[in-house]
Length: 137
Image (cartoon, rainbow, N blue to C red):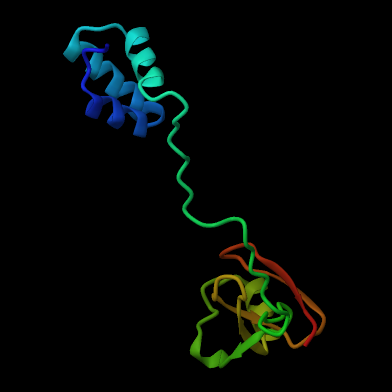
């Protein structure tokens, strides 16, 4: 019989990894036993009973959303261009690019406003999240 009380062994069985190692070290020092004896007491205390791994969600069922619920990625969310300031870069090349901006859209991944010309199809890479998409509408 182990000198370690059952409630301590139960608490030790419920722990895993580093927490279990620290608790084993504490119990070894507290009760004056070696680690091998404590491990044997933990495994032989309840033969055949193992603590089940805790699952945060049920993985046996997978809900597949319908296609009618999904929003197409290539349809941009147009917003009023005048609400945003695209003049943060004072270079001449940036001024030429700003002259080509006719529309403002929101990035479909992160929602950052992007200024784009009205050329379609257009491949856009968001500078904030690096999400890349091609708009055809």
